[in-house]
Amino acid sequence: LKAKSATKKYKLIMEKKQSITIPALCQGCPSQFAEYLAYCRSLKFEAKPNIAYLRGMFRDLFRSQGYTNNHSSLDWDWNRHESGSGEGRERMAAGDGMDDGGRY
Image (cartoon, rainbow, N blue to C red; front, side, top):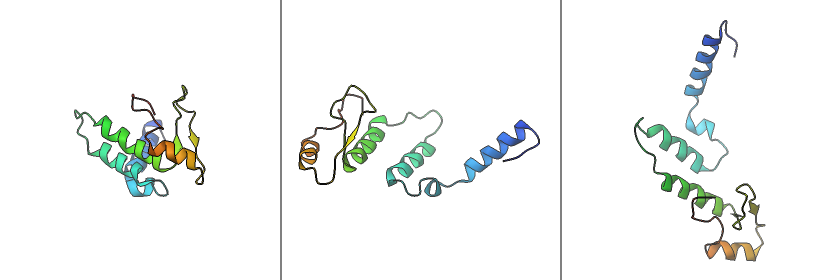
């Protein structure tokens, strides 16, 4: 975006961001991302988000996609199980995967 001043440029950027709809922004992503953004937009300024709800929504998505954390000490050390991997699916079904202690 081109503008004659930084102020005008940032205003154009803001207008562009505001004009993009949630479905357009989240096209090709799991529906939980659109749900998350709609939830955030619906919050009043002073409202406190329901963090347990949001974390649960993404935890369920994480598990449904076949990921597990294996209780790693590194939050980003996630492993995806192959679709044919019975062992990983059994551990996830038994509740193993992301711990519920405040981390993914």
